Amino acid sequence: MKIEQDRISVGGIPVRELANRFGTPLYVYDEEKIRANYRRAFGAFRKYYPNFEMFYAVKCCNNPAIVNIMRQEGAGADCASVNEILLAKSVGLSGEKVMFSGNFLSDDDIRQGLESGVIFNLDDISILPRLLKFGKPEMVSFRINPGYGRSNVGEYVTNAGPNAKFGIHPDKVTEAYRLAKEAGIRRFGAHMMTGSCITDADYFPFVTGLLMDIIGKTGRELGIDFEFIDLGGGLGIPYKPDEPGLDMEAAAQKTAEMFRNKVAEYGLKPPQLKMEPARYFVGNAGYLIGSVHSIKESYRKIIGTDVGMNVLARPAMYGSYHHIYVDGKESHARTKLGLCGQLCENTDFWVKERELPADIAEGDLIVVENAGAYGFGMSYQYNGRLRAAEVLVKNGAAELIRDRETFEDMVRHTHVPAYLTK
Ligand SMILES: Cc1ncc(COP(=O)(O)O)c(C=O)c1O
View 1 (cartoon, rainbow, N blue to C red):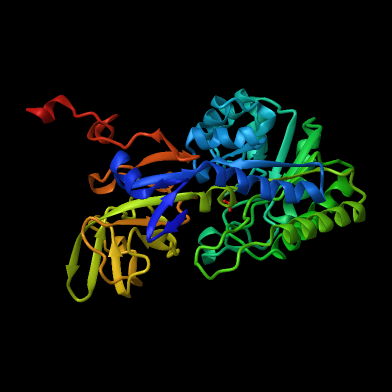
View 2 (view 1 turned 90 degrees about the vertical axis):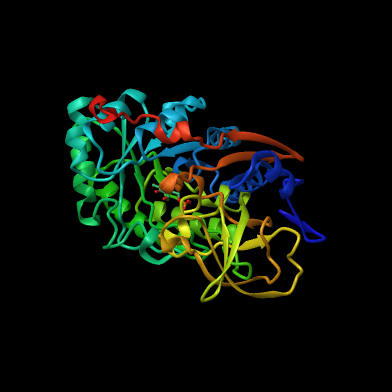
């Protein structure tokens, strides 16, 4: 994103031009930035541990164009559901490049996961006998809850520790692999995903140490090797303008060092190191363009936009911060204002008070920063406010990668019993 003489552009295209062409609210992704983010993270970890691979967690931004960018960069896919597996396979990823990390799986999930030939990452020991009812995969991984997790928005996206629903308790890990070994499974992986959006480089080696102490003991006791150890995602981005970012070099170097030391300590055959981040790749490469529709003077001044919690759920869900720019007015005098969307819910009033240009007016465009991760994917149709369009920009050209929803989309798949139409 660039601001020149107050005018904002993304990927070399003025946001006003994008809004005129595609309408608002509009998600815009900068392809070059996604690729640069991927290469920075992958390059750093690969440098310190050459047998390293990255999978992209599809849930973060599931547009097939984005998943294709990741595939072109060499990433596999981390999938939370059968439909995400179908998406990953539709862009040409093979089974070995797809990890199925769903939780509380149904029999249908298990059956379809097996048919698709992906790597199963089991969230609980109880899934194993159910999986074996349908077939025996060559390889199995277990998701381990190493007892500690963190995030930038408290417990909301902290995915490990005593209050998390994910993963296997450390005391049950050896039993899980023992059962898999006894069932004749010969190839093993191990996984954790402890929390999202961490910008502290020391966090990653710390949780790696926790996981490796669990895995190391299990490996020794059962005499099994791990083909890969997946440290999950969690590579963070700053959301506030003055927040420091993650020192990727330090995170990679310290994590690789911890990993190597623990592999040696427990005498493990050196496994492949995997990670499956997502926010770090697409978060700051995605922008949400919205329009100011009306301005109300009530108990305070409230700017009414088409960016509501239906379009961007994170602020209402997690209380998370997203920086807002106003096209054409960034250098203007500021005052404290509120800003909301159009839903009939007061949680839609997602900025209660923020310094914004004092002369913000009807017809202005706002640009919400860091909207690429968990933005469109979490959007919904409440109040008949339909999902936004998505656009990919590169070298000054824009491509529509998802149509804006229409009324037909809102009523598609609904059925009215005949007697109700009389
Ligand atoms: C299992 C799993 N892996 C990876 C990720 C990606 O996390 P992040 O976007 O923090 O890198 C998530 C996100 O919730 C996840 O649930």
